[in-house]
Image 1 (cartoon, rainbow, N blue to C red):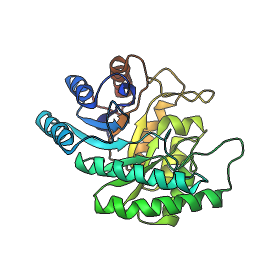
Image 2 (tube, one colour):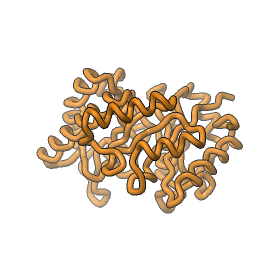
Image 3 (tube, helix red, strand yellow):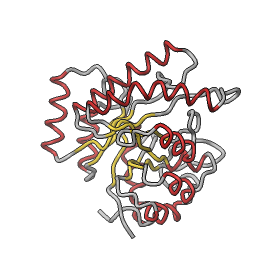
Length: 274
């Protein structure tokens, strides 16, 4: 059975440490691959060229790399009904693409819009908005050498694997558009890993791991929810996934939670022992 490179998403650190200190701390634990979360003061979208060069030089010196960057969706909405919000979101994503390019991060995790769950627009309408906004981002991302990894998020316009697969296949541009498959999000919406990964047919370039229940959406340490971990390794193997597994753990003691989650996934055959 294949095992995977263990990486860390830095979400838990966005209010407590800047990105360089965060990476240095986790490097001591022998993590080398990271998904940096763009959130000031942790990781500033408006950082200077000199600041970006300093971070990149530090990472090169320590043998660290970014698998991806992640722009949280609280202040963005690629599927907003308001044109000015969509335009502003496209501008923010272009800045995030610039940052990813400057830091040699091959992917930018992209939440495909946000919806009001009480009365969402029709699928045709929300997909038209996404085709417009992503259509503007695709050539910009291609010019900067950055892929857009659309994530399966419960409140998004494309919340599950089939929605993402159908949309990307219709949209084309699979040299730029791919999928970041979030295991906890899939479980929360009632999707099995076998079904989700099989319908994505090689589109998955990143995988997020954390734990949750189906009653409350969480990104807890592995073992704190009821995600069926025993089936994940086989589903990944069958899907021929060969990218990193990124621990996206949100916890007040992130280092302990990340290490315990890594160790729990060793038992599940997803990671090698340290």
